[in-house]
Length: 489
Ligand SMILES: CC(=O)N[C@H]1[C@@H](OP(=O)(O)OP(=O)(O)OC[C@H]2O[C@@H](n3ccc(=O)[nH]c3=O)[C@H](O)[C@@H]2O)O[C@H](CO)[C@@H](O)[C@@H]1O[C@H](C)C(=O)N[C@@H](C)C(=O)N[C@H](CCC(=O)O)C(=O)O
Ligand SMILES: Nc1ncnc2c1ncn2[C@@H]1O[C@H](COP(=O)(O)OP(=O)(O)OP(=O)(O)O)[C@@H](O)[C@H]1O
Ligand SMILES: N[C@H](CCC[C@H](N)C(=O)O)C(=O)O
Ligand SMILES: [Mg+2]
Image 1 (cartoon, rainbow, N blue to C red):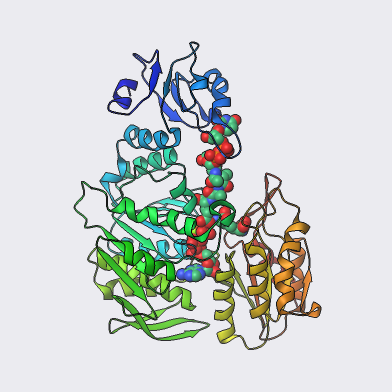
Image 2 (image 1 turned 135 degrees about the horizontal axis):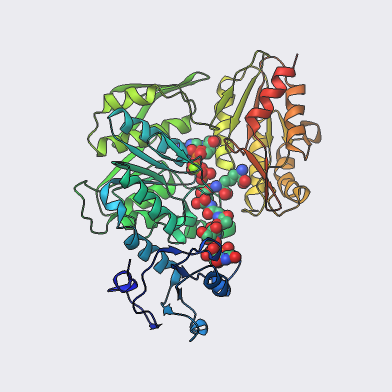
C-alpha cells in the first residue's frame, strides 16, 4: 500500500521525505521488520521503541512513525504523530482493510469466565452452521484450525492481521476475550464490536490499574466502543451480569440495547432452582430447564451469558441450551482427571481470590472427605492479591500446599512469603505446608490424599509451561498428575 493512501486523512503533526513509498507491511517491533515495512515506535513500560529505530532501519524499514520529535532526522523518512500506540491501531485496521466489518464481532470482558463463556458461545454458533473465529487465552482458532497464542488479546496490528485471515477463510462470527490491558493499551481500537459481554469484576491486575475504579473504567471501554456507528446489520447489544456490583453500575451507565442476566436479581435471563452436583449443574431459565455437564454456580453465570448472546442473534433458547448441554468441559477449567485411586483430582485456572472461592465452594458442595489445595501466585503480577488468594484457599480447604505458579522474574520464596499472611489468618501451621517445586507439591498432594478427598490443583489450568526468569520450561499440571496417578497404589 502506498504510504500516501495509508496516511490520507490521518492527523499527522509533521513528516519528512515520505513521497512514493510503497509499504510492504506494518510492524511495532524492530525484530519483526522485513524489507519495505513501516516501523511504528512505541514508548513502552519496559523500553522505548524509539531507541530501536536504527535496528528497524537495518532490518529494512522504509519509513518510521514516531511520537517523539527528538527522533525527527534527515537520515530517514519519518512521520510524527501525537500518539503512536493509537496510530498503530488505526493504521493497522486500515492497512488490513477494516476486516471486523465483515463479520459479527462478539467481545467478552470481565475478570473471570471469559474463556469459558467464549467457548460456549462458539459451540452454539457452530451448531447453527456458522464458521467461527475464536481469540483468547487458550488458543486462537479459525474454524478447526488452531493457532498458538502469546497473550489473551493480541496487539492491535496482530489482531487486525488475524481478523483479515479470518475474513479470507469465510468466518461469519468472531468471539474474542478482551482483557483490561488490551482495552487500556488500545489493542482493540479499530475493531467494530457488535456484542459485548461483561462477566464480573473482582480483584486482579491492580499492579497495572492501581484501583478497582481504573480497572472498571478500562473494562467499560469495550461498551463505549459498542455505541459507535457501524456499517453492519446486526443490532448492537451489551450483555451484563447484574449480580456483580460493577455490572450493576455498567447497566445504569450504558445507554444502548442491553440484556441482563443474574441469579439473584430480576433480569432478562434469571437462573432459578439451581442444583449443583459433581456431575454438573441444573437450573431453570425463562421456564426452560438447563442441565449442564459443567459444574459450579460460576458456570451458571457463564452459561446465562452465552444464552443471552444467543438470544441477541435470534438463536432459539431451546436450541442454544441443547448445544451447551453437550459440552463436557473447557481445558483447565474445573477439569476432572479421571483415576481409580478413590479420590478426585481437579485442575483449574483459578488465579484470583474470587475464582479460588468459587471453585473451592463448588467442590465443598459434593466432597465426601477433605479438600487438599495446591496453589501459588504468579510473579510480576498484582502482589496485593497474594494474601487474599492465601486467605481464600485456606478458608475453604482442609489442607493447603503452597507452591510456585509462574515465578517470572521474581524469587519464588518471596512470592510465597506474600501469600502466607492470608493463610495464617485462617488456619494453623499443621494445616498447610510450603513446597516450592510445583511438581513436588503435586506429588505430595497425591501422597497424602485419602478415599473421598478432592485435590484441587489451581492457577495454571491449560498452561503447558512454567515461566522462570524469562524462559518457559515445559510444565503441564495435567500431564504431571496423570503420571503420578498411574504410579499411585
Ligand atoms: C503491560 C502490557 O500489557 N505490556 C504489553 C506492551 O508492552 P510495552 O508497550 O510496555 O512494550 P515494551 O516491551 O516496553 O516495548 C516498547 C516497544 O519497543 C518495541 N521493541 C522492543 C525491543 C526491541 O528490541 N525492539 C522493539 O522494537 C516493542 O515491540 C514495543 O513496541 O506491549 C507489548 C507489545 O504488544 C506486549 O508484549 C506487552 O505485554 C506484556 C509482555 C504482558 O505481559 N502483558 C500481560 C500483562 C497482558 O497483556 N495480559 C493480558 C491478560 C490479562 C488477563 O485478563 O488475565 C492479555 O491480554 O494477555
Ligand atoms: N463466571 C465466573 N465467575 C467467577 N469465577 C469464574 C467464572 N468462570 C470461571 N471462573 C473461575 O475463573 C477461572 C478462569 O476462568 P476463565 O478461564 O473462563 O476466565 P478468564 O476470564 O478467561 O480468565 P483469564 O483472564 O485469566 O483469561 C476458572 O478456572 C474458574 O476458577
Ligand atoms: N492472564 C493472567 C494469567 C495468570 C495465570 C497464572 N498462572 C499466573 O501466571 O499468574 C495474567 O497474565 O495475569
Ligand atoms: Mg481467558
